[in-house]
Length: 162
Ligand SMILES: CC(C)(COP(=O)(O)OP(=O)(O)OC[C@H]1O[C@@H](n2cnc3c(N)ncnc32)[C@H](O)[C@@H]1OP(=O)(O)O)[C@@H](O)C(=O)NCCC(=O)NCCS
Figure 1 (tube, rainbow, N blue to C red):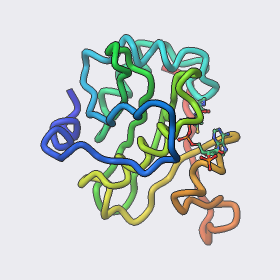
Figure 2: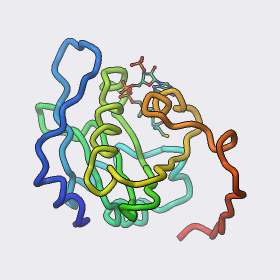
Figure 3: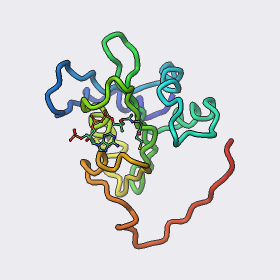
Figure 4: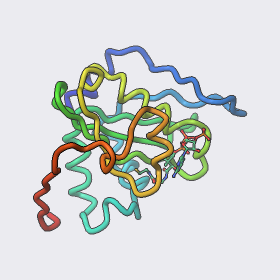
């Protein structure tokens, strides 16, 4: 189980200030290994995990510093996101996903708030993520495109899938 899920377990439930909805949003809670099969189902078909075996995606999730999600009243996992953080210089957000029938109710924003306020992320200087089309969601939290902001050349070593 990732360490930071333990950290979050000691934190109070994180509230959200989403627009009014017909039913209350489920709370954002830390997730552990038992949630892995449901998480992999939620992530099925996501463009950013293409070509990576589910078992490997699962290992990546378990290596997260913070892994949070939301369960509907039936107990089913309906949303998750995770972050890898060095707690000081950089944190990377990955795998932000909400089940289609729960979209548009503020859950992704609640997940983002929970991760950004987490003790392991709260003081990090740069929080990074990649997105194909959800810029507007992240802009709400102050994220901006690095193509406008980078004053250094970002270098990347790309390796074949596991
Ligand atoms: C993107 C996603 C996580 C958003 O989840 P959500 O719970 O519907 O989002 P929320 O309701 O919390 O808020 C979304 C807000 O961001 C805005 N937004 C901007 N671009 C968006 C996009 N591409 N998708 C969803 N919302 C977007 C919405 O308009 C909304 O703002 P509003 O409340 O002012 O109208 C969800 O649509 C999803 O799981 N998509 C498939 C997976 C994915 O693309 N994940 C992101 C990878 S970077």
